[in-house]
Picture 1 (tube, each protein chain N blue to C red):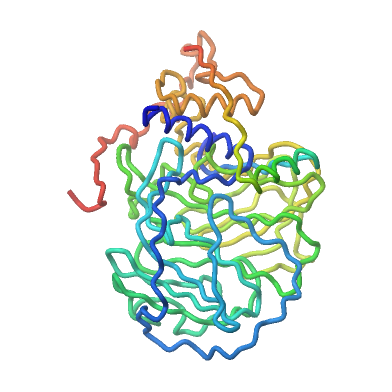
Picture 2 (picture 1 turned 135 degrees about the horizontal axis):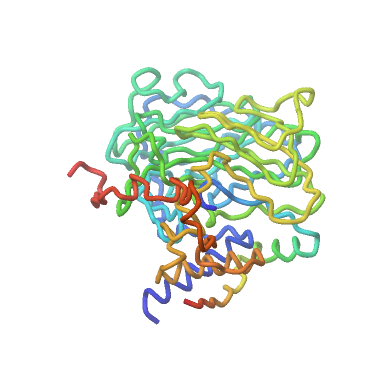
Length: 38
Length: 408
């Protein structure tokens, strides 16, 4: 889907704190390696 | 490292961050707003009201509103008056990793930065016009003196290019309001933003998260970057100036109470649906609704020029979609994410598009298919392919680059 869409990401405590820590530190998770067959 | 390769990794990082809820500057191409001139240098068409009003009591304990992908507007204090500055100017907005448009906005942002005040605040907003045409600013829903209403030729002179206008009033309401240019069609090129008035005492029940989303539509022909503000058909639909899957998710702690504020300043009404949860409608563009009026639902119609505020308990872990349920609006007028259309997942050699799809698929735990699977004998079925997945007239339009938006 594209366009007018987003998500509410409901996270358990531990994952929530982990993400908030990344946000506070302005860090992005490492991009996942791309594998493309074609 | 080549420029294209560097851009690829930058875009991939930005997109991945978005998936994890980091409000990354996807609109990195957006120029930084130049320094706003000293208020003394601005042209004042009227004299601001007295500055002697004392600061209102701040007894609230609300959480600040978060507008994903849109900054807040900072302010300075002149005595007890909160002074904000907005500069209307052209803005490059990257609404999707492969689509940057020439919009207009405020302080380098489109939508404009979010203003947050507390009920009872005295505010002064200096609006500078760095556009090539006149503008003005209307404080939608706020009960202000007529000379602050922002309507050209009725309550004020238009703000000419290069000039400024100072608005000043006391915010005696609470709720979800917005500001927008009140000159012809300027909302449709992005001149709008949120104006949040927090109550002096926090709403009950207390919300742990408070998010705001501006709904917008854009008509941008292929190979053009300038929105057609006169169009009544739209091919790009955005939340806070971004089109999914580039939108930044709203992060909520399991068990928390979540408030969502939707504001619609476009041409279409939007039935906004939340997956997997029920919510209650707790407010409108007129402020907080009495609890006796709340009822359970999971879709709220946000009409043009309206705000709707909903709240729910985040009881279920997971990624719960929020989207306009008009079919065209959740697919950017049928540019199917899994089809081989605009994003070209089937036959594309666009590394960025492929990377985005791979990242999204990995995160969702599904196989990255390059097109939606179809039956081998699909063509023998009446009704296949759907008309929707055949070429649209807009896609076939011959793109004529008009970087300035001016007639050829």
